[in-house]
Image: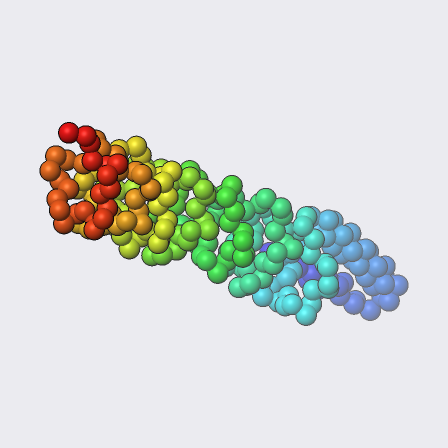
Length: 222
């Protein structure tokens, strides 16, 4: 690097003859000029700049373009925190491989951002449902079939008053064991509903016959 720096030209010594000395001086200066010019064509300008001499104030705005930046020259340490804004990120440039596991928290999801199409089949398990979170309005009509109801799961407390109509009771489904003692009152028996076949022999005693209830027409001839 020292050979590339300008040096003091070798001036001719004055010997008392001014004309001769002037000619030798001009020749020496021309030689030095040509020598410097030839060396300047091969010198890299960067060798004249000491490391650390150019600071931010010395660089003009927009002076450094993309062509001045080598590939991969900008590493993570050179990027200030929060320096990369949304406008600097190209559409679809951040894929799933760029996201850390568990990086997307609830606070990062907009309200109603996760719709039905974003949920995989069977993605919502029982553990993901809060207690009492499924209300009646969330269950479609006939959505809960017999197979989805555990044995003995529906207790008396779960059946509303008058909720079980005749159509919901299978033929012959209510046996004697299901009828409480004295549960069937007169109001529940239709007129003329009890025929002879339903009355056991000797079932009707004197106590069951009202006064004057048996007229002559009810007594057979001898």
